[in-house]
Image 1: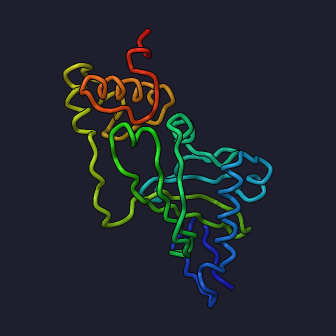
Image 2: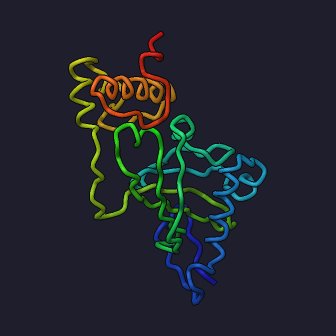
Image 3: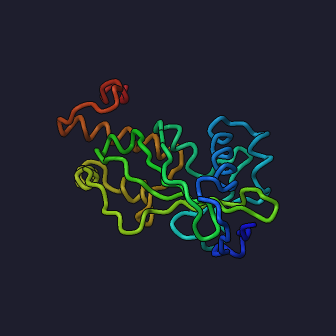
Length: 209
């Protein structure tokens, strides 16, 4: 039987002779993701530990709580920007299930950044439930090119202080109000720069009526 990862032992070794694709943890993680996607609170509750957490980049500190639907602080941002993702390369690594995730969303389209893969780790507790997840960039992956610096330069002239508000400490704040402001200003910038429509949305000038 494989060793079980716990919240206090993220590096627990895996001892199994089964290929990773056959490992039951992978099936659990797939089923959990499907339940979260479907908004099935009953199924999520059966598979998720009561104190499940999510971390970004590093599994340090207390993390952020996952709600009863298995969603974290980016859920409303993802819904607003119509995020879509695909998962590949399922594996067991460092006492967790690791997925490679590739996501597209309207924010990425607006800054013309191609979808960039990242890793999602699911940790399993001693009761066989999802105790947390870690979302982390893939080590060594080159940054995808985009137009964010062009937008930043435009914003400094036309909306001083905007970037500091949207990205305190240099990181995106996914608050829903800020997501809406991101979209409004990005559309405004693209219109001013003569860039093509990438969303099929009404002209930005309609947003100011």
